[in-house]
Length: 167
Image (cartoon, rainbow, N blue to C red; front, side, top):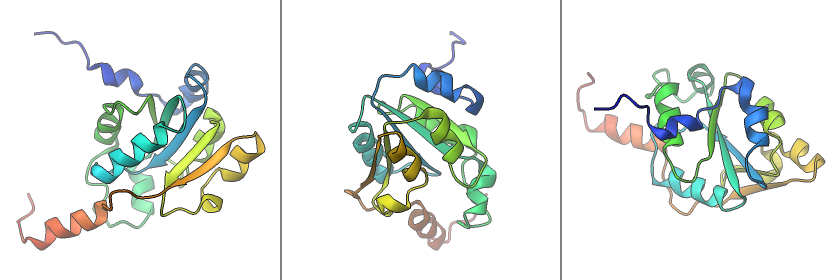
């Protein structure tokens, strides 16, 4: 049996390498971000729609501490950053996956310099972090409408409501 690492791991991009690696991706480059704690159909549909806006997609994921500061619950994220990176990198629609420790992905946006910035439909385009910067260099900003209504927080609540004991 081979000890070769899965090919999707080649999509992992430490923040300090993002500018150089993003510069080598096909253009127009699309950038999005999120926690992606428990991947669900809404996420994968959204990411496919974002990718369709350009030739390559970079996804920046909130670090564990960044997720905790969002107020999603003391036990969130349920999956650690390394696992969330792997699941997102394994998606066909994703070309590169990085992360951010800050409360917003602005530094990663400035490093990647995407032509397209995208977020889910719960974000008005003018409220998307990085919108002024992307507009300033001639790019576009998109709020992608939800096609499949799913919520990680609602899923977690539903699981907890079943009364199953926690490990």
